[in-house]
Length: 632
Image: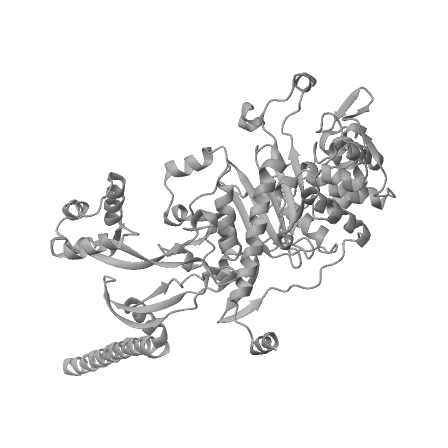
């Protein structure tokens, strides 16, 4: 009986063990299946993902900054280009002591305390195998001395990059602008902008056409180890260089004009092609060195530019707003003819005009006597135009002025252009809350009072006067070179401004007489050679009111008046006389009389423009057909 019970107990225990063994084996098989499934998922299903992650740890993709496009003048002369930039760098892990290495290096090239602190700060922030720039823009002599002493300078080497070069320096800085590192506000997520040595356009053409000049970034694939140390380059894509920009500018004429204006304290000049609006010259003096900004201008240098009372950072040609003085009189004369005044209509000038209790003086104390319109223009009689202003009122004068480009921006391809002011009754009411007085029409008729214009506007006005009344618009860009081909700027046909040719002819006769009639205000500036004659209009705008007491005792000479209280000198003109091609405007801030100061500058600039044109025509290669025609 006991034996039977023991056998049943052993059988039950055996079954229990077998069941547990089966469960354990099943669990192990299940776990092994999960492990196999996971390994399959990781190694087969997710293989691409982890292969990419492994490559990212092994391959470092780095951006390459593309070469910035050049800027050239209309004849291909380089105005902005890239220059090799030699800089000295130090790698901390290759030198026992960075401080000691800097001490040795400072005996070859000067290292200021500020630079030294900056270098040590960057060394402490970067990985020790990464190079840190010590100095850049090294002269070749400095590079040579460092190379010769390299055995005594562990961790020091020469690196080559590029920097922006402006061959004409401050002569073109207001037009071309400059490049500088991107600010925080410029960062748009483009990784190219975050490269340490990358520069973007900050002003002028560099800014307006920055994207075209910038090009597209390249890249290089670098194999690195687990610490990120470069081992070898696997692949390289150079990217796309920036496009070249071709300007309408004549660099030779620009340089000549800049040198001439440098003789004055503060001045601006613009020369345009009257047929198509090409800006051949635009100079604002004083100027600044764009290389200071490209290299990184110092605090003291920046503060000195801001504190300069002559405003060297301002492009006066497009941002300076000045009363046009008598250069505005052509607008008043055209408005008068449109209103029915005959150019033969005569006004007597006794030296002043009385309006109520006010007396409005002519610049000529004794008066001009009876004058018609052409004589009034050539002799710049104020009383004649007082009478026209009284008859016209502000609206009709303003309408004519706006047709010639005054009182509005001209959309020149430069930043910072200002619109000036051409006043009307509505404008004054909105501006001051007061009504228009008749005396203000008299003041506006001689380009004073509220009237403000820019030198670019005055050049455009002159171009439209002498080209037959077509609304040419000034521009600086001729075309863009893309992939070694020219993409020309569309020119189109310029619309008429709606002024009869007969009326324009009267203006040209008056402007001719200003220079070439013995009674003209700029007769002393005439050119006797008939092939070089030119026409124009002088202007002198007051910056303060002259009192009756000053008129009674006699006006002081310009050199007896503080500079800021002297009149502005203006001149607008054109050449050649019979077949106009060039329009010019000149303003000399606080320069005195337009005939004595601004007209001689315009004469020299126009003469140089015509000389350069003839010189180029003479040296230009002739086609076989023209050579045969000449020999025949």
